[in-house]
Image 1 (cartoon, rainbow, N blue to C red):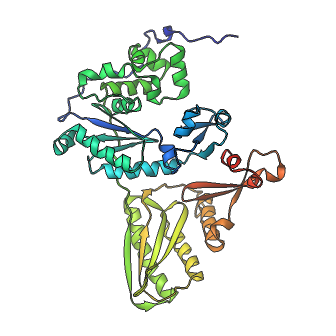
Image 2: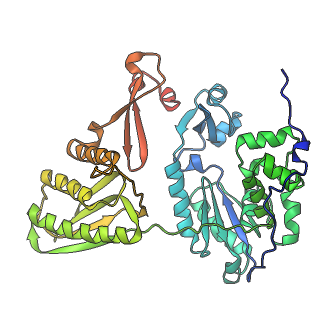
Length: 438
């Protein structure tokens, strides 16, 4: 049976559902947003040689699809959105990598921290873009071209494939950068530059873009010309609001990036010592200071390190990776006690320095009325102590994998510092390409 396509009559005027456009006071200083799109970040953050045929895949509706492809893979006909099976047929020696969102985020945050030397307002637009409000920096650097030149040199030094575009609104700059369009400095030019952009630059969900294509809509301008009430009712108020933000009809507020905060402190021992009792007394003092700072900031940490300072040798450093961000003093103290019970310093220490990992927002979990701690938190604390005693590689979970051999249909599963690491039992006897595709 042929599929019945939806008609533009769905957008006929009806009950008022679209957000009303209210006149907003003009900003004291006109804003100018510079968008930086990094289309190949998913591949670049893995440090893959672009001369080799390689792709990064991600599950979409249960099927692995290509997210990014190297230049060699692109020459073979592989593009973003290609199914993995199709990509494997197009390139015989293809290298396949699983997407690493945490690494992509680290790369974006590193670039955002550097970009604060250009402007005070930087926004991270995951997964592959940055927004810089450079209206206030034009006088300092002299021109928009000078700002783009400095930023381009930094991106080239980081070996990033990038696209620039400036516009009066953040959403417009982002869409124009994805399309590799020219800068738009004047408000009067904005509607004409946005109208011919394809719907793909919006990064709206695939089902929304499919609906619009069925209705014969191919560009941003096609959507902007539809009746507002019908568009809000049939497509969604959030997408209409995004259109308003792009065209400057609604406020386009962005969360500014803040450089990650951390904590560090030192306790002097008074004299050289190798006594664990003295060390633990100093560690308790350091943990009291750390946890007080975490409570004040409503933050948690995913790891920390202890450095035992010696007089005539480099410090002895002990690193602690946690299974989840925590702020529990007793849990941190038990990990240090377990470590020091089995370690002996080569020479006496004169001081202990503690440095925390990056502060993250604390997550407060509720528990049962008669339960001292939630079961999940107690379980994670137990796993941390077991890994500390027996080693991280000796403690792992199990999960099922797609494998026709029953004895190979399982995998070791480890989670450490927020990243999941899977070691397949079915890896034995397979080639490198077969392992990478799973």
